Amino acid sequence: MLVIVESYQLCKYSKFLFQPLMCPVVVGKLHSYHQWASPMKNNVISFLLKRRSVVAKKMLPEEPAKEDLENIIACGLRVPDHSNVQPWRIVVLQGGAKRQFDEQVILKAAQADSKEPLSEAQQQLESQRMQRGGVVIAVLSTPVVPHKIPVWEQQLSAGAMCTNLLLAAQSLDYAAQWLTEWPAYHTDVISALGGNPGADQIAGFIHIGKKEQQPDERKRPATAEKVSWWKAPNS
Image (cartoon, rainbow, N blue to C red; front, top):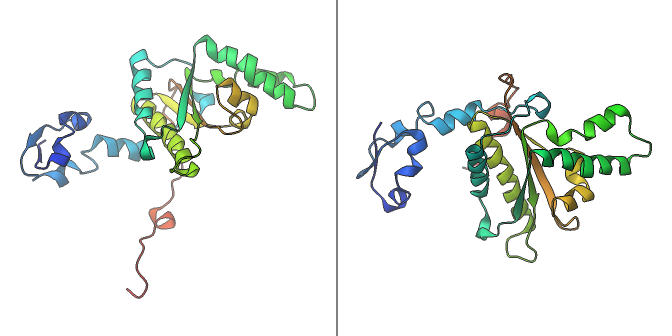
């Protein structure tokens, strides 16, 4: 497939921008853009149209390969971020650290908040919450205040980071799910991850593991139900 680029704005990114789509780049006039952008010929669009999360309780606790995990995190860091504020932090729970976090943080927080002793089933659930997958990536929203960029926009950047991490993991064919659950809102959990409970929030926990089977499709909204095209009054 041939993609011909004529402007500096496009060619400055070099051929590596197109490498995942298997498109050679030649500097010149752009003739075949529409052919290149066809959804069925664009690997990114094809993936996004089919991607599906695997719930944490249905994934196998197998860790991603080291290189894959590094690439997933690198994709997370390439997130939209107005004014380059970098209002987020990543904390990785891997190996024995997952069990230690469950026992020393999650289970203790659950017991402290319960009016009655936890049942055996509850203890088992909370003591294994972060061990359902092979690795968990916690994303902290850490807004910079005061700053010209509103807090809401900084929080959106942390949410976008969660999306990047999730999509990167799924694009490598790992089982992955973005969860919050009650630990994301508990001050002891935020503190244990190095956050400030008075200012920071947990945007999500990205659970990544191995697929046991391909997930079933879920109902998706019809475009007409959620999308409209604005028109000027009296137009």
